Length: 178
Image 1: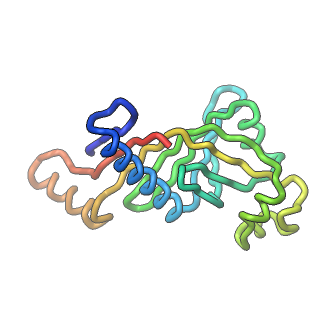
Image 2: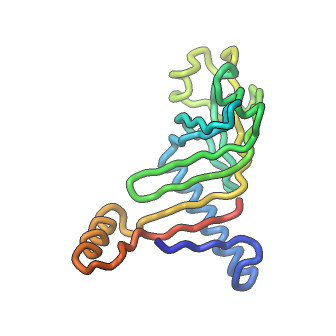
């Protein structure tokens, strides 16, 4: 797997870095929009990591994420105690891990803006459901992996590796600041 890192202080001129960063951020946004369900990871009161699936309701162009949840859930308790979170998304050929800081928000107007029929399955009383809150993740960085050519190319790369004894080409990994 090839890994690149376009953080500040990297190689190349600023225009190239900015162009690559825009491409990387767009790739992160695209993977999240294509996947929608992410594993939202928080830290519990004992310092252990706890993950649970949440549906991303919005991913902004800067990588920030919005989720609906209930105020009485463990993720809300954990976020209020420690804001650092990670959310990972993936499909058969692309994966992204987003690190950031979360906050619990009670905002009826934002809930109405993000409202959709899928959310109604969890909150049948609508955006005014008692206990409904939003979690906003201010994304700080993301790392993504992709397999150019998708699953077929991955299988072919594996077969080539087995036949030649050479290490598999598992695609590329990029890390970007958001």
